[in-house]
Image 1: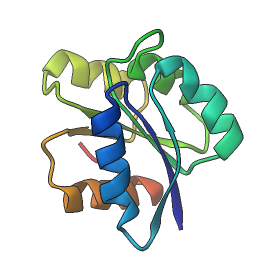
Image 2 (image 1 turned 120 degrees about the horizontal axis):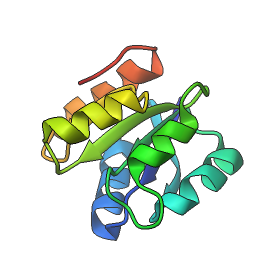
Image 3 (image 1 turned 45 degrees about the horizontal axis):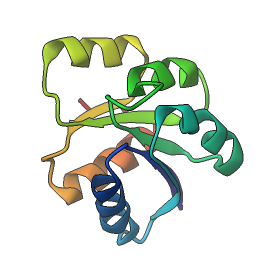
Image 4 (image 1 turned 30 degrees about the vertical axis):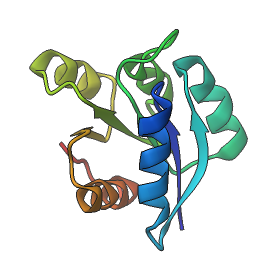
Length: 123
């Protein structure tokens, strides 16, 4: 079972992603947070394998959280509405394992979670 955590300041988006990914038989949503400042405490508490971060969140951005997680056992996927080269490069520099836009089909997002869990990168 792949344990994931979702971090997105938009509750509807976060809960929709949790519902969709929760339908997968090999993925378990273990935590959800609404702000970047909640990411590290939740990771320390729930120990997810993969964390999906929104790039823009209050207090601590997804990029800043990814920098903190760089080199840990937790793989990071940025899930964002922003398909801009500058954001993408900042995410890559922060050490993320994946970068997907929010209009990605649910089955592709689940596949991205599986891939990064197995040590691959998804961009």
